[in-house]
Image 1 (tube, rainbow, N blue to C red):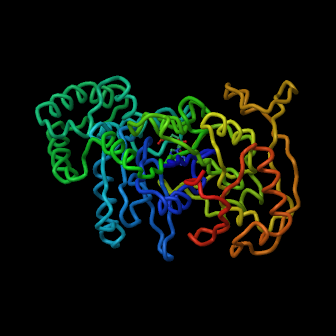
Image 2 (tube, rainbow, N blue to C red):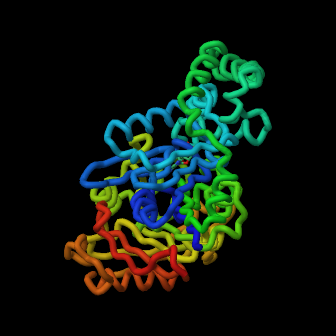
Image 3 (cartoon, rainbow, N blue to C red):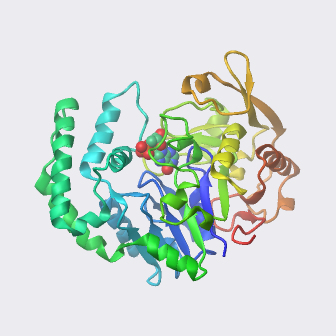
Length: 432
Ligand code: IMP
C-alpha cells in the first residue's frame, strides 16, 4: 500500500489545504506530524470557507481517521473550539475519528505569553511569529520540561510539572518582560477541565497507525508550514520551531521512514512569505500587489498581508532535496493570469558577484543576493475551467514545462482556482 506525505516547498501558505483535502478522499488516515495552530489550512467546500489550524483537513471526509501526531504541539482550547465549529457546521462526519497523541506536547498559557512578550521586546530581531506559543512549547519539549497531553490524566504529575514550569516562566514574565505573572490554580483548573473534554480523542496514535498500516490502510501525512520555515533547513532564525521536512512525518507520527512512499511538494506558482526574513524575489511593486490582491494573500492564522514575489526555483530545489520530493503539485496558477510577463528565479548573484544555484546558509548573504530570472510571456485567458494540460493557454503550458525542468520534479497536479473542482489532475500519488 502506498502512503503519501504532503509538504510545502516555500514559506508555507502554498495552498496545501486544498490539495490535502483532495488527497484525503483517497486516504484512510490523515495525520499531522509537526507544528500546531500556527498553521491555517483554508478549504472551500461547496462554496463554504473553512479554516483549520490544528485538526487535519481530512476531518471533512466520511469514514477517515484523523491523527494529531506526537510531533504536533497542541493548544487544547483551540482543539475544542475547532471541534465545536466543525460540529456546528455539520462538517465532522460521525463515522470519522479524531485522535490526538498522548505524547504530543501541550501549548500552555505561559508559552503564548512568552512568545508575544519576546516578539514585543525584540523589535529589531523580531521573527514575526504567529504568537500562538509554538516556539516556547517546542523549547520546553526539547529541554525536557514540557507537559504532554497524557500528563493531563495524572493530576499529581500534571500539577507538579505545572508548578515547576511556572516558577521559571513567571520569573521570566515578571523579571525580564515586565508582564503580569500567571496563576497556577487558574491554569490547573482550566487545563484539567480540557482534559475531560478531549479524553475521547486521546490515544497511542503510533500504535494505531502501525495497526492500520498492517491492515493495508493508506496514510496521508499532512505537513504544515513549508520547507523554508524548517528549523534546520529554512531561513534560520526566521523559521518556525519544528522540522517541516517530510522526514519528520516519521518521527512526528511514530512510524518508520520506510512507511512513507511518495512525497508531494506543494509549490505555489509564485512565492509568498509572512513574517520577517530574507525573500530574494519579493516584489514591492504593482505585480506584487496583483499577486497579493488576486491571490487573496492574507495569513489564514493572523490575517497579516503576505509578502509576494516571483517563483524562486532555488528554494524549491532545496525543498525537493531535503524532503525527497517525488512529485510537485502547482497551486494558484490562475493568480498569474493577466500578467504580461512572468519570471522564475533560477539562481542568485551574491554581492561579491558570484553566481549560485544553492541557498546560502548565512542570512546576511541571502538578504544581499540578487535573483537571476528567466522570463516568460503571460496569458490573458481564464484558466479556471481547465481540466487537462491541453486546456491551458500555450504560454501557461510553457511556464509549467520549464518549472518542471528547472525543479527536476514531475508535476502531477495543477490548481487553477480555489474550489475542489478547479484542478488539473495528472497522476494519483497513491498509485505507483
Ligand atoms: P511561529 O511558527 O508562530 O513561531 O512563527 C515563526 C515564523 O513562521 C513566522 O515567520 C510565521 O509567520 C511563520 N509561520 C508559521 N506558521 C506558518 C504558516 O502556517 N504559514 C506561513 N507562515 C507561517
